[in-house]
Image 1 (cartoon, rainbow, N blue to C red):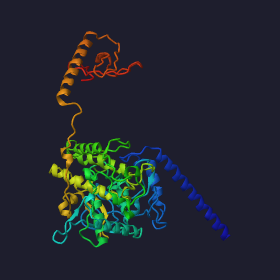
Image 2: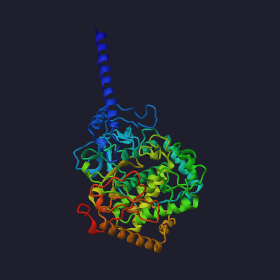
Image 3: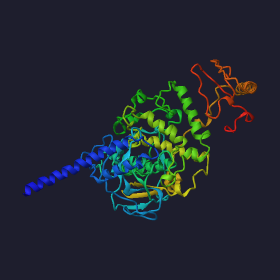
Image 4: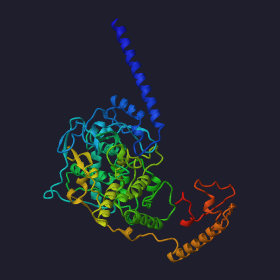
Length: 526
């Protein structure tokens, strides 16, 4: 009887497991049918919320089961943590906080990859419940030296060897150790795929890309990473190198990243080998076909636009103003995040992978050691832009009080706010200067200005004449076509199109319609 009871119980458990598995499969497929969204709509859909509940209550694979970091799923026990709220230090675990652009650490959940939109679990790096939290304190200027970040093309062989040794040490640490290289990479996975909800806003994921959190988050991220590397080396002067792809001498992929602990297999070696190929800082998936000199000139012109002419307002450079909650969501990357940040990630990565792993995907980007040199240069350009346009920080409390959590070199969980990272001198690091040739690379017009003005005047006269003809022949419905680039073809006057437009017949090859003067516009158009 006891054996029969046990067998019945086992069948019951098996049935429950089968039902749960079927529900997970169904909801996963349902969620994947919804298009990916960088603003989180799919992440807050009913099917996704139920799927998340099921996933997060099941036992996720433990990180030390096999030590693997295969593409797709990064796992850890799901029942974890929260910050302690505002003010001073505390312990992870609380709740009921006011709304803020700060992660609710107890909310760590499944998220989506950014290209094909498959579910990910990035919570390996999320701290355990009850972990003490301390607020960030600036390094002591009386005892801490200033760390000097140098460009990769000026590094000594001795520095490169020491840095490689530190990376090898990080990769050999136990997988659960907060300083483990792969666990450090999981930090980026956590914050950049929306794995956390915002504090006080359940169902509103926190994203640090494509908005005004981009620069401060990454500054804090590489700040702590740099200090951990220095701690492993016993060197409090260690500073990360930066890859200056914005200047001609730095526009090729650094050679030493091909060796030993610096190497990453998931790169586009068509771009990286043979060595010293000039990077396309505006790479969009299509090869430019330019020779090296022309590519350098094009890169400098791009940098002028992204740093100067296209970045005159703080929102244009920093990204859109995101507020707490779903209603505060925004999707507007700044100039540098869009190009060359995204484009260099894309130029380096292996785009044959489903999600462009490693450098080309949020959840894997910092598995490539070159990530840190790339982002050091992004960070340097933020400081350069602030130098060019002083007093251009946001003063919004939503931004200044936004916070992130990182493990420091002393294995403490630290809460650091945006307001803490705005002054590099207080963080005790700086950048070795290099030239800024892009400041003088203002793009020149293809057509000389005096000739362009003459062409515009001639076209304006043609448009005026065509509009006058249209007034005389309001019933003229014949479409005139031309393939001449010197002429402006006008088929009919604006009134014939009406507010709803007009379908052009299949014989039309090209039609250019001059916008009529205000007096000729319809009431709808006005």
